[in-house]
Structure formats: structure tokens, C-alpha cells
Figure (cartoon, rainbow, N blue to C red):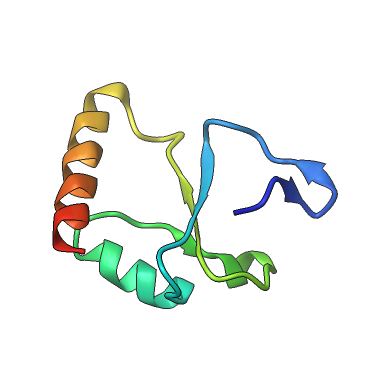
Length: 78
């Protein structure tokens, strides 16, 4: 979604910004919560863009497969 946080480059690997169609961050967050996936809306970070900011730094490697499965189910349903 963007490559800078104000005027600084974003760190790769821990935080991801995501969007879906023309949904607001609130709508996308509401949908993802049904799949056990949480994030914060970009407007909470001061952004004017729709979307979410998700952090994966606390997901242990053994949980990545579970996240992948949840995202696959989300994809199938949308």
C-alpha cells in the first residue's frame, strides 16, 4: 500500500499493510476477525488510506501454517 511511514522506509518482515477491494479498514478487519486474524486499521495509524496494518512478528514458525490455512479459507469465501 505504501513504502514510507511518514518519511522513513518501512521495515520488511514484521508489519504488512493490506487492503481488499474498496473496503474500509473497519470492514476488512471485521471480516478477518471471523477467521481469527487481527490487525489495526490504517486510520488508527494516522493514514488517510483504507486498509489494515498487520504484525506477524509474534507468530511463531509453527503457527504460520495455521495462518496460511485461515487466509486460504478467507480467499475461498471471498
